[in-house]
Amino acid sequence: AMCVEPPENGGWEHSGGTTALSGIKLRFVCQDMMFNGKPHPPGPPWYIKAGDWGEAGARKLASGHIYAVFDRGSAKHHVYAKMSAFRPGQLWVWTWTDFADPAKEDSGTHSWFRKKG
Picture (cartoon, one colour):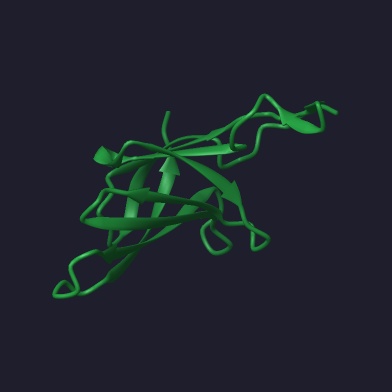
């Protein structure tokens, strides 16, 4: 089988909403072969690079969202990205920050991004 590049693949810049992220990059890895019963190349089919959080392996959920968790020790950032149903050609990103310190209130943000370049 051959992979078709998904529309989410690539670099995105902030275009509106509340966010902790000025930019985000989604990287798709075509796993169109099987080797010893496992997808090849090995690893997750998606990666998300979000601001200074670094890059994390991601997966596409049944809902169509690409999902990754960034564990920064003091907080876990859950990132959900999906092509917007309301803004054609834009990526909708929702982040949920779960603080390790129970005195800090967990919070969520959402925003839209447009493709760079």
